[in-house]
Structure formats: C-alpha cells, structure tokens
Amino acid sequence: MKLLVTGGAGFIGSSFIRHLLESHQDIELVNFDCLTYAGNLENLSDLCTDSRYSFVKGDISSLIEVEEALNQEVDAVINFAAETHVDRSILNPSAFVRTNIQGTQVLLEASRRRKVSRFIQISTDEVYGSLKESGRFTEQSPLSPNSPYAASKAGGDLLLRSYHKTYGMDVIITRSCNNYGPYQFPEKLIPLMILNALEDKPLPVYGDGLHVRDWIHVTDHCRALAKVLLEGRPGQIYNIGSNQEEPNLEVVHQILDDLGKSHELVQFVEDRPGHDRRYAIDATLIRTELDWSPQVSFKQGLAETIHWYQENFDWVNNVLSGTYRSYYQQMYENRDETLKGL
Ligand code: NAD
Ligand code: TYD
Image (cartoon, rainbow, N blue to C red; front, top):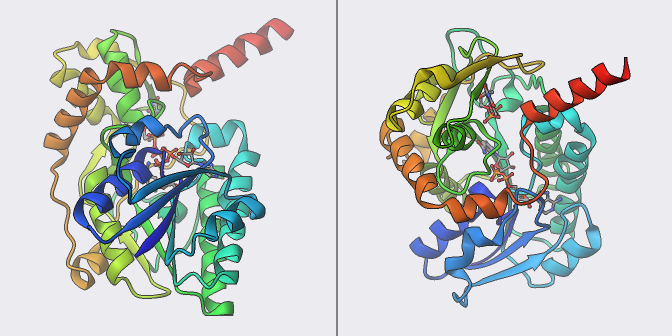
C-alpha cells in the first residue's frame, strides 16, 4: 500500500509516519509538506535511510504541486496539513482559510481526478464548539466552531462530506481531542509551559485557568488513525478521545510539580477571545467498531513528555530559531505599539 501523507513534518503527522513504518512492513509513504514554521524534517531524521519513505516539498493549496505528487499513484491520502494554532488564527485568519479550506478542497479534487481509493481527513473536536460542565461530543453533535481555526477545520470537514455525497468518494473524517507528546511545537500549552518552567519564566495561564481539555498521547492517536485507515467505514466520522479531562491550571501545576518548581511561576493573563470552556469526546464508536483503546495514562505520558523536552534542547533551539514569538508576547508587544500610537 502506498500513501501520501500531507503535513507529515508536523507534530502528529511525523508520529503517524514513524508508527506506520514501524508497525507495517508493506507500507510505502510519501510525506508531502510545505514546511511552515511548524514543519520540521528533523522530526523524522531517524527515517531518512528507510527506502519506504520519501519527502516532497509542496503546498496542498497548489493544484500543480499536488497533482505532481499524485503521479506516484498512491492508494490513499491522509491529510494532516493544516494551520493549527488557535491563537495564530485570531491574529491571521486568512492563512487558516487558505490551507484548511482551500487546501483541503484542492487535495480532494486532485484525489478524485486520480481515483485515489481512500481519503482521510485529520480533524479536531474543536469543530463541535464548547461544552458546559457535563456531556461529551458524539459524531452526531452539531458543528458549532468558535475560533477561526475551528471554523476553517469545520469547512474542510464539510467539503469532505460533499465529496462523499456528490462524487461517492471514499472519505473518512477523524476528530481527536488535544494531543501531547514529543516534537510538539512549543506554542501549544504543554510544551510552552514545560520550556518556560525549565527556564524559570512566567507560565501565562489564560483567564481563570479552569478551561478543560481532554488529553490524548500522540501515539494513542496515531494507533487509532492506523485502524481507521485500514478498517474504517467509507463516509464515517470517528471521534478519538481518551477520557482524560484536565483543567489547564491542573496541567500547569503537574508540570511544575514534576520539575520541582514553584506554583508562583503561574501568571494569570488576559483570556483568549472566544475561548472554549470545555471539550470532551465520546469515543464509543471507534472503541467498539474498530477495537481501539488508548494505552497511555496522562500522568505517565506527561512525565515522559517533560523528560523528552529536557533531553532535546537542540531540537527546541532549532525549531525556535525562526521568527517564533508566543501569542502572549505578540499581544503584549502589539499593545505597547497601540499605546505608543495614542
Ligand atoms: P502541526 O502544526 O504540528 O503541523 C502541521 C504540518 O502541516 C506542518 O508540518 C506544516 O508544515 C504542514 N503544512 C501547513 N500548511 C501546509 C500546506 N499548505 N501544505 C502542505 N503542508 C502544510 O500540526 P499537528 O498538531 O501535527 O496537527 C496535525 C493535524 O491534526 C491538523 O490537521 C490538526 O488540525 C489536527 N489536530 C491536531 C490536534 C492537536 O492537538 N495538535 C488535535 C486534533 C486535531
Ligand atoms: P492550546 O494548546 O493552544 O490548544 P487548544 O486551544 O487548541 O485547545 O491550548 C490549550 C488550552 O490552554 C486552551 O484552553 C488555552 C490554554 N492556554 C493557556 O492558558 N496559555 C497559553 O499560553 C496557551 C498556549 C494555551
């Protein structure tokens, strides 16, 4: 089986490529990625000598580049490529529309023309919006996105639905909760807090810190995706979650405790606009239909992730050597600029 994996140089895509090559001898993979700030080939440096793996630099919103990649006659496309950070989507929504909606449509159209047998879209629970204290998202929950990121992912999902209904394409959508683990770009909550704590810098917690996320280790997510690829039903949506809900402040405290640092490093900062209060996933369908269940407990996975970041400072320095600044820094700097202009 030959696969085109888009966005394979990112956090989850690289973990998926490693998982498939390790667990399936008969798989060949082309990693198609335009290498944004979040894409880093170093994530896969251990695989560059594997003859079943190759890399093509390209953008999913370019029909020419996608069609050229599909000349390799792949059996399935798995689309991880996306702009993924909510805070960036607040500052620059258009990049999200371009990649997550337009790019998805280009990829779908090229795959349809080339008669690719299966198309998997890696989506997110954020398309469902926000929950109150109780309840969980099922695959039937209405789409109710609140951030430009979530809205652009929901747009991509709807295009998949339309290609299934209109052209009969074999498409599957997966919607996972928040992932954590090695190689996650340090703008997301867990790696950002680990690195700030290691350097005794303040840990910026948005609002009251009581927003709840359901956390899944990236390897559990990738095992679920392999099952969906090989055994999933055409036209189906599969929620992927591990039932490990934590308020942000609790996660931050666990990181500080693991590193033996003071809780006084926590700095409550202005809330994110449109901040979803709670996500929680009902993953009954994938558990029962595809016999998948998560293996990594949050406590163990978080401790291992902290250890990985401590041991991989070179990787951290390399990925941060670009123009990266955290959302909070950017907001803070913009505010200074605005004040200066008054
Ligand atoms: P990431 O930001 O780490 O990586 C995204 C990758 O896509 C990068 O390698 C980047 O270079 C590539 N890319 C971006 N725009 C592209 C384009 N136009 N053409 C080709 N490549 C492009 O993201 P991630 O955290 O690995 O997320 C992967 C997918 O999983 C995304 O679709 C995201 O919406 C989804 N998802 C992520 C999470 C999470 O917690 N991280 C949870 C649920 C779903
Ligand atoms: P994030 O990792 O950006 O994922 P998402 O917004 O897609 O769930 O954020 C996870 C949670 O952590 C979210 O409730 C926002 C919060 N957060 C902070 O409190 N401070 C931060 O610096 C960041 C990046 C996130």
